[in-house]
Length: 473
Image 1: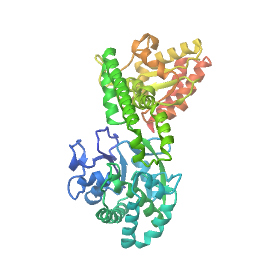
Image 2 (image 1 turned 45 degrees about the vertical axis):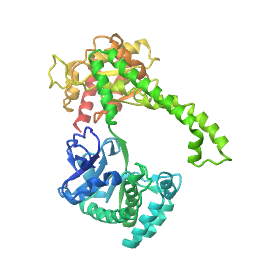
Image 3 (image 1 turned 120 degrees about the vertical axis):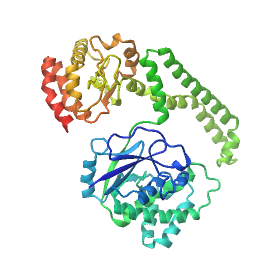
Image 4 (image 1 turned 180 degrees about the vertical axis):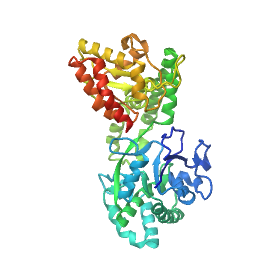
């Protein structure tokens, strides 16, 4: 049994290392190559990507790929997750595929009918056109279509895994409907989002397919993996400044970002304030409601600066920049009274063996921590950052990194000190596979014993076998 998950992408991204995940550039007929496999070879509808979204990739796989028993679809930032919150491995999916007909997203429950929800952002007439086509071509599906249209449920994202023969049957049915619906659809006046119509229709049609075929479905969480390309580029530039201790350059980038956000916010507020009356009439206000609408929009516009700053600086506010510069950390909630750890996998630096498998560990310490416990944490970190311990813990990860000296408190380092404040109450966990059980089953219990006066070296040695067992999995 073989499984291939095609990762639909239209922007540069870092694909998962697992070879089961195959990057596929969608819409490549209309764009420059990203260096991945493209959907513009063989039997292809790549040029229709502005209207069909990731479906141009689905079509290409259907017509041109026959080398796997099971086919999966995900997006370059959205992946199906297993119960531990990690992306699936091939053995895990093989097991699920033996038990279920399809592995897909959680079934969404809307606060209204699907018909009403669709109509809030799209033209509901397109649902009726789709129904007409379905009635002509596949009348046995119409009752389910009508029932689900009035109900609150739908699957989303065109993210799923199923057997190749089932995948082919679904695609044959799906594209037969969508191509005919396309012929009957007039998109005059549609904006760019609404023109992606057939990608959205297919999500609902997947729900209809599953319902009519009574498929055994394994519903999974969907996780955002990675970040937007633009954010990555910005953070990489800032990381270069910090690595070179060029704080002035980093401040300029951040300062420019803040200035542009402020300028854009002021312009946006001024334009909407000046033209609010015709804009409100254009969006349906009447002579009776316009006084209230103008008051409301005036109050709403007064908060534009704050909203734009919050959204635009979200990366900084959440501490993600600090996580990027120091390692692949993520902040998960707020736990003020815990001492939390982070693992940093950093590129080799000058004077160190590029192949050395050593990883530094850092701690975020709540301000309420006693001085005695802080001193124990520093000693713990000093011991953990020895080459012997780092190598023992990371040899199974195969992650080259260099040893950060921990012979002095973090506060002595101006870079770490400048970044420590936003992390003071962050619960930090590593993105490397296996770190969550390492946190709960080794590091946290080890810290507890150390705070109870256990010997640091003996305690870590005791838990090392547990760590290694987790990594060996």
